[in-house]
Length: 219
Image (cartoon, rainbow, N blue to C red; front, side):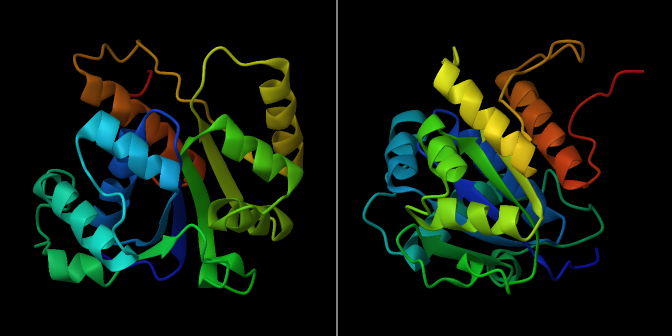
């Protein structure tokens, strides 16, 4: 497995669907990518409600350890079978940042990245990115992606959409972002929630230009 040296930034916000961001993180780490991760404070609250993971109040290093321990039992299922993967090796390729740390490397356009995903992306975060407020590290890093003309994928999680949501999505699409709502398909004949999570994750990877076999493609 060839290690990729440019980072992929992953923002996880307080929309329902934390599992989308975690599954993407799991896959990227298993494939040798460097990942910079930012959880919003609301995402930590949702993680407790949806996943029974009490990560609120942890500093970034303890959060990193807790999230990797949560994921690691699944990493072997998506990794290259010829590659041994251990948690210490993975730790070297993932950075966790607090949402208030505007001095983080990912807040600068000089930091080399392949792209950024916000998954799930709340409509509140969507609005902040559309307005360019840079209210926390997630929206600031997203703003950097737009100004540097780099890939920005927003996995929006809300239903139904209001006119305000739709206008914000159009604004961001016009600015170069990919709007990828967490809307599952059924042509691949899903048998489980995991199948549906993998479909959205696979479509996200497609938008990043990363090949995967996480879902059955239409033929």
